[in-house]
Image (cartoon, rainbow, N blue to C red; front, side):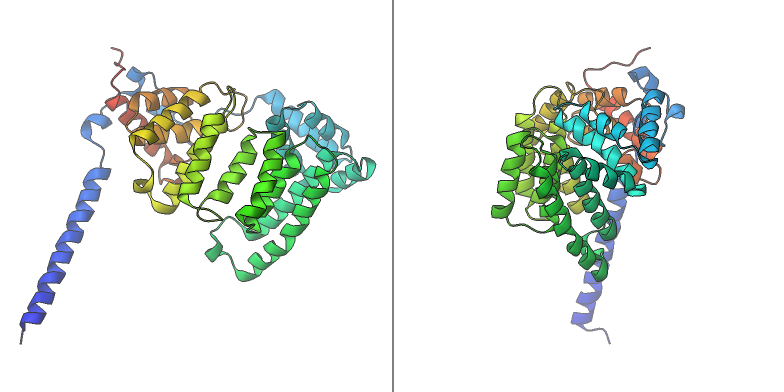
Length: 368
């Protein structure tokens, strides 16, 4: 016998099913490219032909001369000669972003074989660069054990080992800082370790002040601090976005620092979905400021190709299609970067985004 209650339940279930079907089809309608966009000819808008898209790289490959130099430094190190590695970093002078970037190579070399690094430290115990590379290596090894998963997905034994190794990295960086009153590198290591050690805000701020006193616009330092202030570590979306906005406002000409804001947006999108990304007029103005700042950044910045992809993505999402189209023109054929790389077909996702920008751009007319 069907009662009023069971009838009501059946109707509620039917209503729910209909609603779910409507939502699903609505999503399909939203995600299906408009026919007019699919008919866009990218070449007429100054974009490379679709057939030439290259999903294997985020940007052009390094120059052959640079690759040869890097290989030479690695080969010399593995043969026991650390002097080339030292000279490679010292050639950057007090360009602290460049020094940090050059140290990336040394850490990578030491991950394979660190005997040369130990010899360097023995030969020059007062060398801050050698000590910093060692601290970075310890931190890298700790993070390698942990992995990049969210904390709840990391096995307990790996997390325990990770936490055991972190203090050694922090202490190595603290000792490295004693070797140079100017070098911010050890402090970047310390704030990274402090994040993983879950330092309180009161514990973290003095470390940050020491770093910025030496290099107020350090790009990687800001990137690590941004992670500290994000919700999955020791802060919140609000704290992270406020930190990122301050970075945009303070970014000097030629620095990639404003891109820290793009990292914040990406963090929100990954954790909470695209709908959670701020879309107010103020948020759009901030994106324009980021684009303006990055337009002055040096093409030599290693992160530059990846930054353009993320910038183009968020400009398009914000409806700033003319600015997004300009970024797609600068990117060229390379589409092996986020956010496209996480899609089933990166080239297709990239192509759709740039066609959409071209279709909606108001200040651009296609060539005949």
